[in-house]
Image (tube, rainbow over all chains, first blue to last red; front, side, top):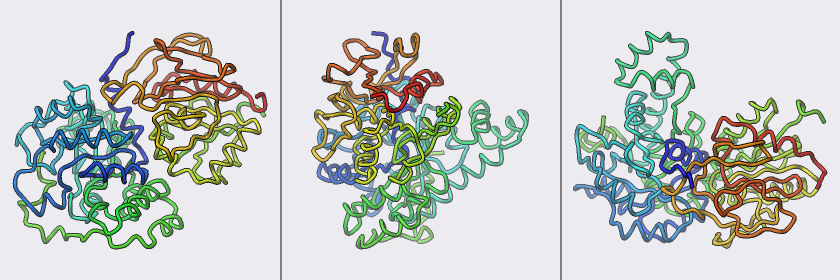
Length: 295
Length: 196
C-alpha cells in the first residue's frame, strides 16, 4: 500500500488532535492511569517532575526506558517523553520505544549548548519550548511540529508562561501589515527564517499548534493561558504535587474546555485541596532558571 | 431548509473542531461550536471531530449525550471523524470500561488499531461518495472490526473499511478536515435529515 508515514502532515496532525486538551506529567504507571481517568489527552512520562528536578539538582536525563514502556502499556492515550536539548541519541531511543511525541526539553540538562536536534530526520514528532517568536520559528525550522511556552517549570508560578505567550502573540500582531522587505528585516532581527515568518504573518498565528507550559497549577491558570490564545495546556508538577491530584486534574481538564465560562470555572475550582507550593521567580538564583536553556 | 441557511454543529469539547468549522465555512455553511446541550438546539446537523475520544467522553455532560442521541433519533445527520467515529460506535473493543459510546451507528471499532504515532500515515482514498480519490490523514486511527449489514462501506483502504454510512450518519477513520479537499464535508452536507 502507498502509505506515507512520518510526514509533516501526520506529525503536525497529532498536535491538532491534542488541542483543547491537557497533557499531564506522570512518574508512574499508576499516575498515568489517574491522568487518563481524569481526561488527559496525553501523558508525559518522566522519572521526576520538574519541581523535584529543581529541588534535587544534578544532571537530569531521559527517563528509564523500562518506566516509559510501563506507562505506554498502562494507558490508551498518547505518551510523550523528554530528551535533553541536542541529545539525538536519547531521541532515537525514545522513538524506538514507540513514544508518540518527544519533548526536546529545557527541563532536562542540555547535552549540546549550541545545537538543537535536527528533528526532520525522525518519524516521531517533536514539541519544543519557546520564550518568543524567534525561538518558536527556529525550533519549527529544525522540525518541531508543535510548540509550547517554556514558562518556568516546577515553580507552580504561571508568570513566565504568560510572559512567553504574550511575547509570541504580541510579536505576531506586530507583523500585521508589514511589507515583504520589512518581514525580511524582522526575520533577521529575531533570528528566524524569513519564509516561516512570512507564513506566520499570513496566518496571523504560529504555523503549528502552540500549548502553554511551565508553572500552571490551577484551573484558573489553565483558563488564563487559553484566553491568551494557547491551543492547550501542559501541567507538570501542578497535578501530582497538589493535595488531591485526581480532583485537580479533572478540574484543569474542565477549565481548558470551558476557559471562557467563569461560572463553570468557579464550580470546577471549588474544594480541590491545596495547590502545589509555588516559587517566586525572583527568589530563584539566575543559574537555576530553566527557561534560559536553549536559544 | 436551503443549504445556505443550514447551521451545522461541531462538538467543541476537545480536538480539531476549529478545522471542521473552517471546512464548513469553505462549504459556505455556518458552523456552531457545541459544548453544552442547549447549544444543540440551534443546529440541523452535527460533526464529531478528531481528538482524544476518552477525553471527549469524559467531558460530555450526560444531558448533552442524551440530546445528541435524541436529535439523531429524530433524523439529525451526524458525521464522526477518527475519535468522532469512535464516539458514534455501537461497541469499542479494547476501549476503557467507562467509555460508553453514543451508539449512533451499528459499527464496532478498535481504537489505535494501526499502532502508535510512528504508524500514522497519509494515503489516497477512493470513493464514489466523493467522485474519485482524495488524500486522507490517518492519525492513531481506529478500525471497524465488524458492522451491521445495512451499514454501507463507502471506501476501503487495504482490507479495512475506512468510510461507512448508515442512513444519514457517516463515520470516517481519517481526517478530511486536515486537508484542503472539501468533498467529504460536501458529501455529508448532502445527506438530508429524517431519511433514516
